[in-house]
Length: 75
Image (cartoon, rainbow, N blue to C red):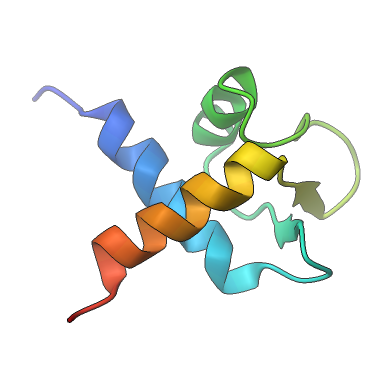
C-alpha cells in the first residue's frame, strides 16, 4: 500500500482548525511525523517540547483555514 503523506498532512493541517485558540495555538494531539513535516514546511513552529500546543505560523493559519474549507465545508 502506498501512503499519500501530502493528503495526511493536509488533513492534519485542516483538523488543527478545530482546536485553534488564542488566534494561533492548537493542540498537538496528532501524529508526530505529520507535525514534523508541517514544521519543515514552515506551517507550524517546532512541535517538539513539553507544551501541549503548537503555534501556527501566519502561512500555516491561512493554509489551515483553506484546507479545512476544502475538506470539510459543504456549499
